[in-house]
Image (tube, rainbow, N blue to C red; front, side, top):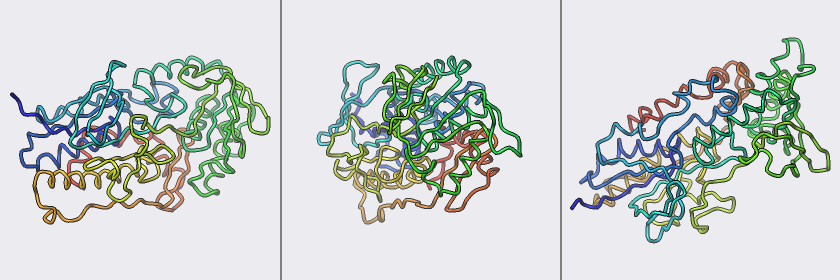
Length: 414
């Protein structure tokens, strides 16, 4: 009879989960005594990973990106590892029992199955109110909603986007340039746009992470592609009530703002807020906003017991952002390695101290406005438009994802 393996379960098949799994397989398991006794098991609702930051452009047409690079098969990224060291399950986490160290998950809506774990990494991310920007379920649902949205786009004369963060502003810029073109160099705004596009935000400025002068620059760029911004105006209600959701992704909508003003739109896109994918996690392990209460230094979930970790949007350690997540991975990898070595009997004193994560709080955010412009800051310094285009705007980070998905980015311990 084959020995029962110690399961290292990774929840989530996107940036955090894929990066964590590669690091464990490359740098942790090979250094463990009796490494054949362990298996990495990834559980993900989607069998594909995608360049999620590119959704504001990708939702317009498949022609915007090379689809073979924008979407990749997750299991194929792990075929390089020894047989038996990795297993992929396309399923959804249902219930975490951290006291008995088991996880219940469901495959294709079937009855829950239970799996014991020796270590657990939670990287389940977050879902968006609009199904156009994330795998709220899986890749099939995303593509179906893109198809519905694209079918409605040619006849749309008005679009309202709720949310003044990067997703809303990038979507407005992409749709504005695609549908309306761009005003001439000497024109402050595009007169008589073909499609009236309006961004509504409850904040006094769009892009609140960035300084007001950069946000104002973004607003001027939006005006040149026919986008109007309404600030200090929260959406109170929409009719139909499910407008913009996966059940009604593109329909004529009446948007009522606080104060009573109404807007009419052929398409309504909610691009604000997110729901953290933690419904399977006991409430005592969550913060009031629904994220996993994570040690900000070690990335362990201290309340859950040994060898349980969380990274990315779902973890409370840092503000949700891809660059923060990628900075978390080396810390996560080092502390998992240390914990597993100690669990295998290696003296802790010989392993040194925990590696510590320190959040970079400098002003850092890049926001493309259409296919050739953008605003942003890096490390506290404002960036010129051409630099935002070069780094992010030309393909929304697609130039970086190949090596992340296949693990080459993590070939060396960092």
